[in-house]
Length: 386
Ligand SMILES: Cc1ncc(COP(=O)(O)O)c(C=O)c1O
Image (cartoon, rainbow, N blue to C red; front, side):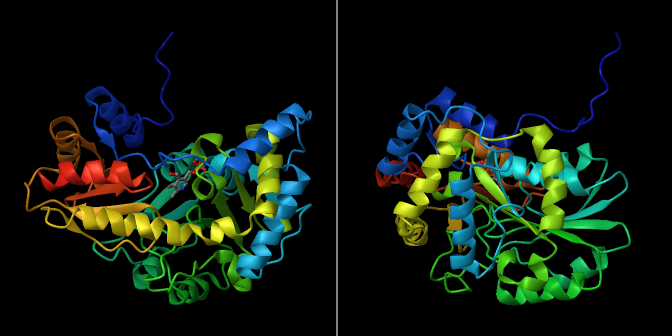
């Protein structure tokens, strides 16, 4: 048999897996992969055990357990004034990754173009490629990583099927403003372009950001909402990245196409966890609202740890990531620097060029500060000595 021709010839193991593995091998403090090293709320854990013991162990409905879809609809209305129909406009997914993949699969055909912004989350390009689409990559530049709307306008053409946006943005922490949303609306008006909003960090926008802590969701703008898939992840909000539960909200016509793909990609998602999340959303509606303050304290604590170091910190307006320049330490390419820092200095980070399809290297690394203060302090001690 001839070797199977790869459908994703340029894809290797993700940088997150590579750096976490390296951190383990060398006993480094892992500030690379984006996951918390603290526990989810105890009530949430208790509710999963409860629903398992109470018999919620068979398939839930394809679109997701009804109580969870109801809780999501209430949340979308409370946060963004957006009304989504529980029956036809909300689907629970196996992580945001599956929601993004499914939305792309439902919309993108061979020959279609999809506009993405780089640094770009690593799943977008392979998902587009598997559907035969072509990514039109717009590079966002440090330190601000803001979209240049003239460049976006120039990238739009007759083949543009979709624009994918990620706000708050991993890895830069940049948040889109109301003006960005207005610019986007003006560009897609009178087109058939579909929007895919990766809003997994929706609850982590800091009070000192340009929006004053407000998350600008596609769901907030009726003109944008009518052409948008809006994706969020419970993994990021409730410190449960390992549960892989998220959701997608979209107008009924888009959601109908989404579900045609969803039912054969995953069909449905872990039942007891869905019911537990529904209970928790009802029992503690303030948890998500407190998340930005919680992470802002961690960001400030971590930034303080790096005072007096030779790292230069960029702004972090949202997410749980902090970018830094290291050119006062050495001039290595960022991938090499990240490996060196992990192996020789004991702190694992992600090189930002890993998010750049053209490999462009601005000498930046990403730290994840979703960690206990003790972890951040231990990392700080090592980093100040570099
Ligand atoms: C921007 C972005 N989108 C999507 C995801 C994937 O989320 P999930 O773990 O729910 O699949 C992540 C996770 O790190 C992310 O940072």
